[in-house]
Length: 248
Image (cartoon, rainbow, N blue to C red; front, side, top):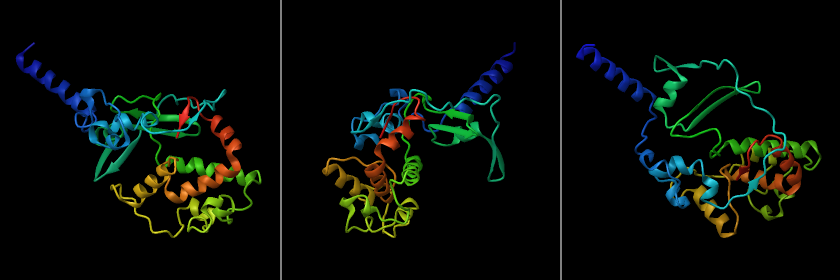
């Protein structure tokens, strides 16, 4: 085999490895094994982001939900769906997306099956990823189930009808349907700076001994209404889908 062929083979191997690498791996803590932060302040620093976002319940106080005895199955489709998309006049694949974006995981579900999934930065399906706004869907399910069972009279009711602590506040006077739509009319800045409205809200809750889930303040108020009148049924609904223990 010629030196030229060896060099060409080595270049192709390096190119393939680079193409499969996730962006900014070293900045995000690869050499240290993607550690989780020791506290919430450290969790949002670059070297701890990846580890913290799949171990948030070990950093901050959290509630724990037991797994379902018989969870709803979520099998993987066979064969996997090949996903393509267009961006800036180019044709790209899901693997391209994972190589270009700081995405820890992408899971695509259709008709009750996982049709595609990818993981970056050493993440696995067994890890509990930070759900962020996915929690809004869980709150909405709880509200609608409470409505179905008659625990909530109408989506046009006000949050303060179910959560006396909200009485006299803007969110308390807001209809549940508008809280779910994040249309309370409140001026609220959430730009992830240290003193935005979200940070002030979370600090206030911590002082009162509670912990906020990232659902937007309006959705937190709706969640309070759900908890107040739908706690047991909500837990049963959640246990029906959780294969491993969850936390929030």
